[in-house]
Each structure stands twice: as C-alpha cells, then as structure tokens.
Length: 134
Image (cartoon, rainbow, N blue to C red; front, side, top):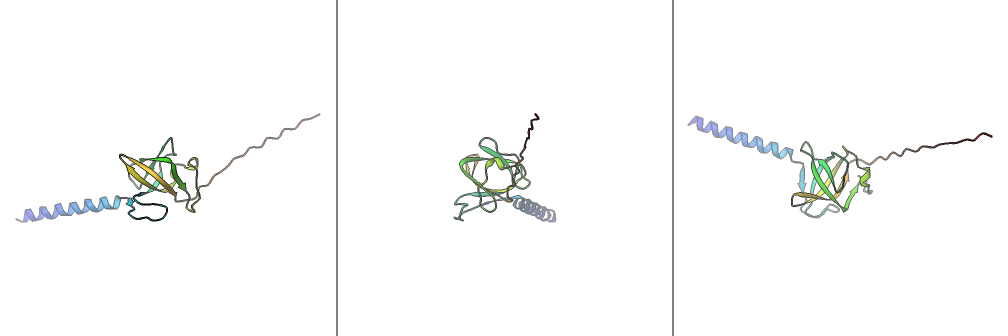
C-alpha cells in the first residue's frame, strides 16, 4: 500500500516539474484584443535575429529555443524603439527584437517587427585627391 502511494506521489511530482519547466521556457504570447499597432489575433515572440533577412524570410531565435523561419511580406513593417521605420538591409544577426506574426499553416507570417535597440548605421567614405605637376 505504501509503495503505491509513494509511486503516485513521485509521478505527480515529476508531472509538476515537467509542466513548470515547459511553462517557464515558453516565450510567446497570444494577443486576443486590439492593442494598437499590434492587432487582433497576432502572436508575439521576443528574441534575436540569427541571420540577416534573405529572400522572403528571416531566421529568429526566441529565448533558448531552436531558430525558426519567419516569412515577411511587402506589407511587413520593421521599426526601431521610437517607431521610426527601418530598412531590412539594416538588420544584422544578434539584433534583439519582438516579432508580431500570424500562423498560416506551417508558416509564421510577420506583420510587424519592433527592434529592442536603435539601429546604428556606419557610413564609410573615401576621398581621393589627385595633383598634377607642370
């Protein structure tokens, strides 16, 4: 009788630990109401770009999870923390961001990307001077 009770208690404890660890590892949230620029029915994922955007998708890692492909469209907007639009060409690996997307089948279609930090663009210029001697 005691062995049966001990087994049940251990099984319940193991189930609680597994449930708690899965809940703590979850980094996405669903938005069920209109919350301004985010929108209705969108899911939010916070993490960092794994690679610069290529073609019609980018690879993004949320927390410690495996990287996932997120597909973007011409209507997808990407903004910095102050709300200024940012070009896709300015995105670099390891840039932290929040992705707002809708799941369509097995694809995540991105509606909006909000960068966590402002983008710093460095522009390098080269000047060449030529002199002629008589």
